[in-house]
Length: 86
Image 1 (cartoon, rainbow, N blue to C red):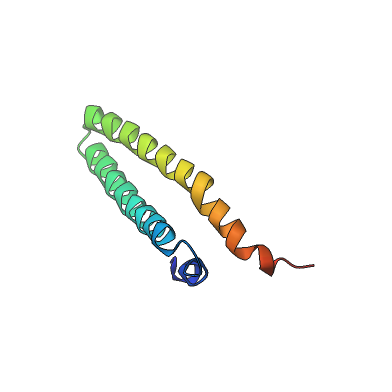
Image 2: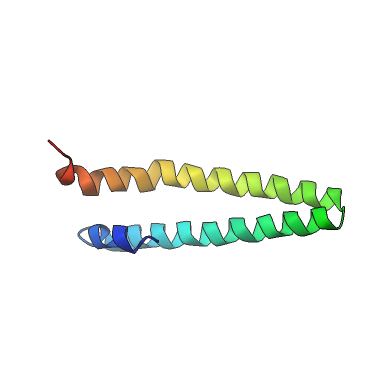
């Protein structure tokens, strides 16, 4: 999914931006795993576990969005500033 972006990131700060991409991809996997746990808990009517997993999901999602907002989108703007339509 991010291979398109890594082509542009390789110009500078390669290790930081590749680590960012890896972190974001891992976040996606973690969020999917938590979602599956929520689904399984709900199927078992284990609302205590579901509530715990939902809180966990919200926390992880908020961390992920913050990382995207403060690092990914800034890096994208920086790397694509020369590609803006005039």
